[in-house]
Length: 618
Image (cartoon, rainbow, N blue to C red; front, side, top):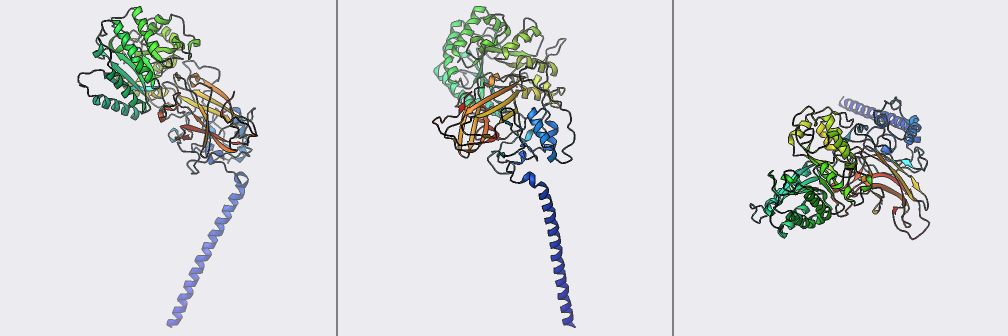
């Protein structure tokens, strides 16, 4: 009996094991069938396609689903639209849903938008996910940028170029860009009796301001220096060296300085030296400081006269004395740097009443080196005496000047009157007219807090955000790549042809000379070439088109090369990350190159030659 039970138990065990095996085989066969059915449906689309996923129709480089992206990209050029139409048959039923009309403003490449035109572009759906990965990586979060040169899905323009598959929508991300934006003050009193020759307190103060500026994602410091203890004597070499040492600490952190000297920061009137010759000697002494720090000086505010160096309540208010100060500054400050005066009246006093002519811009001409700073911005009808010929008249007069020079300063909270000039609408309107590049974040703090409480702007990128956020991000320049046309292959002895379109959606312009670089990289090999387009001509409210043809080195290694765009400082010694201009696009940014990945190109072997240079040839 026991043997029968034992045999029966073994039979049941075997049957259970057989059932488990059969069940496993059934599910494996069904899974295999489904997988192969899907593969057969997509084989034509995916076979031997080594392009990254953002070039196959699944996701773009920013990780956005292309079905959603297609609804937002109504601002694309005609060649992009044709490319999308050719791909419609490959999309699912969901992807083929009708596109919504775009609300994007269409820039005219040859037309400057007036000050009342909204610089509207389609906002990126996820502006906080901009990649900083290296496109040479093969990870899924950072695809290898190797487009398939044999793909038939590209739409070429008449020159044989194809639009690079990039995200051309503007993002609302904060850009840590040089020579623009809000700033903090670093106030220094030379020969302060409390230092007793110990400069450590000044160093700590400067380091604290540097830290505050860095934490706030700013790149400017107002370097405000009082000479009140040197009214009747020359500045000592000890203190001149100290100024250079403090400036160097700022330089090492990728920050630039707005410079102003005065003879008292306490607001006392008529606080200058008894003899104007002493002021002139001080300016000539400070030439050493200006020259040594030319690379990090953004602008020199005229200063020296009146309380806080603001040119009112001064013993030297006559025309002859004021002109003498301006002349000495023009001779002492390097030609590459701008100087700014407190009011339009002082500019006209020195240069005459005519409207600024662009022939004076960017050529070392004194008229093109002098701009404006307003330390009572948006306060009263005259901005506390800033405007003497009617506010609107002065604004329109200054418009052509500040397009090429400088406008900045600090606000003063609304002082009463029939019109409130610092409301959202008027603040933005006047900043567009004046091409405002910088403002003091610490003064007037009541104005900053007032702007933080306003949410009535109509900017499509910053709608729903505070007026402060809009102003913070649009001060100065803000560049958006709108299109990049590149070749897929370069045949024997051909040059590399690139076409870029860049919009400036900021209030102002980049006023210092700066030129972009094109970089070619393959493994550990790299070439870079300076482009001829000067970025200070990428004007606010306009799309700038750049067509560049590059000579390739005759000994360049044939194969696939990656193309990058970099925008470094004009001074090659400034290599901190914040010295490089960033784009308001979600694109792959290579930190090691300080450059944006644009596309990749197959370059054929050269037929021979001795020109090993990589440079723009047109």
